[in-house]
Length: 578
Ligand code: ASP
Image (cartoon, rainbow, N blue to C red; front, side, top):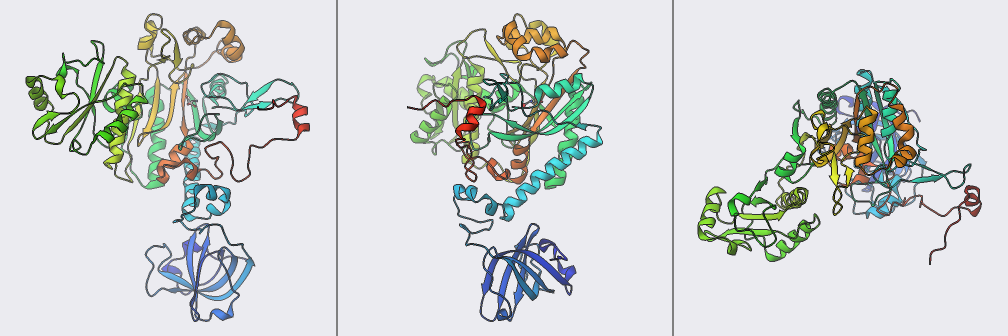
């Protein structure tokens, strides 16, 4: 079974060569006097041909075969295949293994339901597109490792069985057999360990790290996922970002041949929010948000007051197309972010119409038309709220909605930028003076904002940065607090009592008294990067054996009940559901 060539690599230069090939029958056409077989292996597909089919054993789809033959030039090339200029004339054909009839056609174009594809994932992976996604994923890891190895980083593995700690999402728990009633938690990220590696003097760490979060699933989330995780000592934010830009430039160049322009643009969090209504803006199209308040003041609607922010978005040529029904849909979208609803204005027969027009005087209308340069069929949607996040996020969702409806993004284009200067805290809705950490509790507040921690924590910005690619948060990180006093202060502001801190993070914070270097890092979502570079919006397309939306594995059927003896050993009893 010695193969001489990979199927996908045969080209005109091989014409005349005797080759021995292996692979799966992707397709067969027996025309009686002519036999065509598409032979697939992990590198691609090549066409086999014979004008005396009866000399060879009959083969069916997905049979594994070995072939000897001669490469010849094809009279009419097949432009759809990289090997399309040649074909292989069969001299010998041997069946190595037969195959049952597959439940779906194994080709890039398939009408199989995703459930079926997941149940027979091993067949789904034979589709060249799927295999290519795995190759892209592997290439990303290889470049990450190579780039950081060259920069003096050390790959270190951190534990999978961890202390459960309130890091944000729900933990996956693993019961202890030795200590009944106690549990390990699977890591949500290697955050604490990588910081301890910095205390440990490693200085430059990275890891391709499996992470687990027991959250409700969406199309771009999986309960287990992989981070390209790194941490460094003694670098400031600029140095850290530019180190990462080197990786990103190499990545895009090598994987998709795209030349990333460096340095990347940096947008401050509140600027991104106010302009794009998002902390992960896609800036490949306009539809930017703007402040409408000065233009309509004092015609404030009953839902607005002096404190209200009034932000708007102008969508040219969508006045007529945006019917009542569409507006209802948009209102639903806006309400998801806490807004009460949207107001609309549109230019109809040269006049301002729409739900808000009746609140404006004629001079105000004329002023609006002028200042916003409105023309026929322009649509203005706007919202008001005293909560800046609410009004920004709400209109951001409208911006995204129209970008999809109007196909404003050209496929195959890339938009990379940093969002920096995140707020340190996110106020908890309806609970004045209570906060969660916008990133995580180990994030370092900006030096110039330290003084505001006591009086105005909401205004404190952090050394926190996200790398945004095509509107996805592809990664994020922070510089870390490296002194005990600030760390305790942050814990307190997050509402953790001294007792809580001692129990949950005492082991970690203690380390900080032994000479902790200034440090910081970042983690990329490997699946996100793979999705962007493979051009898919479905995270399951870049995971070999993904879970479904119920966090189950359709192939092995995990999770399943276990033997009573196993539970007994763990000291666990299952409560009977009603
Ligand atoms: N551990 C962080 C996360 O999972 C990333 C970082 O701050 O390095 O988001």
